[in-house]
Amino acid sequence: MQIKLMDRSSYKDAAAIMAQCLSQPWSEKTLFQELSNPNAHSYVAYEDGEAAGFLSVWEVFGEVSINNIAVVEKFRRRGIAKALMEHMLGELSHALSVTLEVRRSNAAAIALYQSFGFAVAGERKNFYSYPTEDAILMTKYLNGEK
Ligand SMILES: CC(C)(COP(=O)(O)OP(=O)(O)OC[C@H]1O[C@@H](n2cnc3c(N)ncnc32)[C@H](O)[C@@H]1OP(=O)(O)O)[C@@H](O)C(=O)NCCC(=O)NCCS
Image 1 (tube, rainbow, N blue to C red):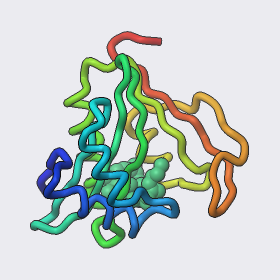
Image 2: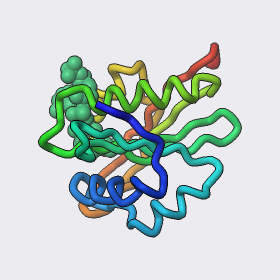
Image 3: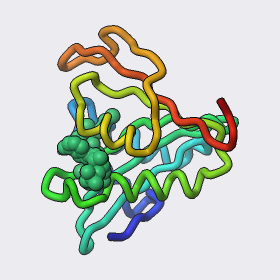
Image 4: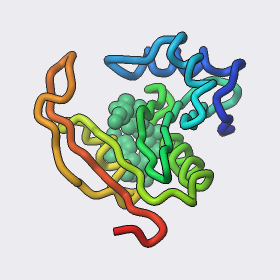
């Protein structure tokens, strides 16, 4: 597996991964715009040259928020999401905290985040559409932050 920072050669791969995995994927245009967002860090994972996984975060003043993580179905349970998370946490090791929202029913993603030490920090009622569902907020503190 290879993890690359998303660039002009890979943003369409990221769009294809999101379209396969998420109910409200970002468009190619949005992903292209992310390339010039100084707060954005986006990574694409390749398995034998095939686009397999995507992770997008924003970092503002040491606070990282995870926007999206997705792994193409046929590549799941092989550690690709884990590798993307480890890569991102390694690159942003100076950060103070990492937060995210996840659908209450998304047991796979919640288990992934728990395995990285994220803890439930709250919830947002009816946060998601298509279908409507509550969001669980999870946070992981780094570098001695509470
Ligand atoms: C969530 C998702 C990204 C996980 O990707 P993945 O590459 O299959 O995950 P990994 O193989 O790296 O798994 C790492 C750990 O996460 C947990 N995990 C992942 N998938 C799981 C599942 N289906 N059930 C239970 N735990 C799971 C496990 O703890 C796993 O470690 P283990 O395999 O040693 O038990 C993937 O299922 C996906 O793309 N889902 C659809 C998109 C989505 O829901 N994204 C999250 C939005 S918040």
